[in-house]
Length: 161
Ligand code: GSY
Image 1: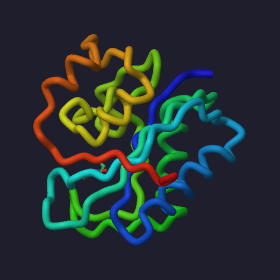
Image 2: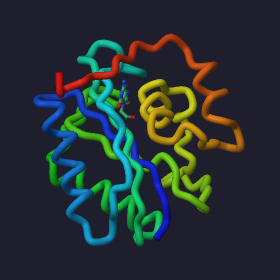
Image 3: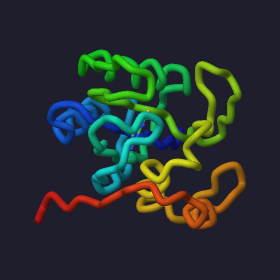
């Protein structure tokens, strides 16, 4: 089994339901074991601003799928949940991105790992920090990366009240 971290985000329709359905699909795969899930975060859109705020989480998994098979499965989840994405960087039903896959770095444009923009994005780094406070990305301590993030809006949600 290999450790990987996935970033999930939604900003169309019932965002929490979309995220929960994607997590259920991960959980129901015989090739994936969910190890940890961050809190939900409401996050300001990055890239294209004229759209609703996102709901984002990060999930830690152990998986027997090799990286490209895991990518296929992430794409399958997006298809299954009928991802709508009309504008690049624009609104989407669900995004399931591989952020990190232990022991596998790649510059392939189909699957670049670590995810090429993750260290600039509070909506990835803050939930990742919550579940992996000692991790390094490209040999840089996550605490250092978090300190240098721009002031992008992000708010932790407590659905349990
Ligand atoms: O890369 C994921 C899709 N996405 C997001 C996102 O998930 N959250 C926020 N806050 N902004 C985003 N911009 C894009 S594109």
